[in-house]
Length: 360
Image 1 (cartoon, rainbow, N blue to C red):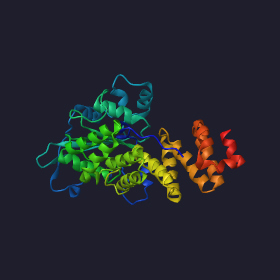
Image 2 (image 1 turned 135 degrees about the vertical axis):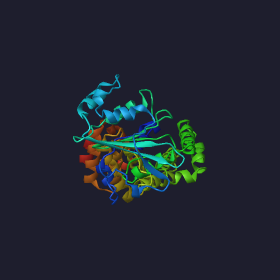
Image 3 (image 1 turned 90 degrees about the vertical axis):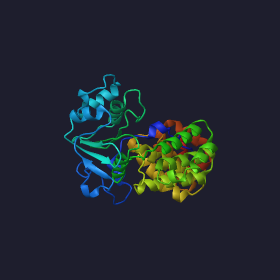
């Protein structure tokens, strides 16, 4: 078998969310629609109230609300691929906004837009560049907006960082499966410390930082995901399994929904964990989900789950299924031929002529 690649922090913070992906969690929680995103007075907690007007921290959300047609807005320097995406999108068929203020906080706004013909894949690159500026890699104090792109909807949250009203609005969005992460200076500091230590290869230091903040990890799918990644990097597969499972459970219950990319990485990593622990029956459905999600979204390295699926079938003596999975993995990436030739997990499978032929 082969381990999947670790996903970088910046790559998983924001991603296109498919409602089909959300429904695949097999729960009865509501699906986001244009109408269901509207907040009613009865829904508000006592410390948050609706206020009139459009109150965004920076001007970009206001401009976009006035002209929700990206081709007319810029930014002027765009990669050719994004130019093509922007030209296909057109103007929003519907738009809405609501503004909120928490006790002792500033006013901010929730804005959402519906595009009748759907939002093309790649549009999140444009809206992030537009809201945050071409050199930004995420929200900043001057441009704190969070943006979520679905199949037909674009949702923007504009509040000062850590504002109680904004944090409540994000909790409202989490009910619909949007990966609206909690933010506080403490959370940002802990996450930065963990990622910094991880990037430097100081995995024990990163785990120590996680262990020192159990109250933050308990409701953060991202921090649980990092525990899974750190366990994998240390070769502690039981630890890694616990981290990935915790992240996926927080996603399932919508306590802390994951981005599509992070959810795929959890499934991919968990599947590898289970194979390494020889929990083959448990690994099969996890790897099948990782394959389905990875193939649909074309995540880099998604065929690793296909290859590992072939290994599981090979270890279980399921030759027909092994042949199908290995054939699909090689079709997705011909480089799988070489590791397959010497992989002990496929040794018995390669004694079968039809499977051996795949790696010739």
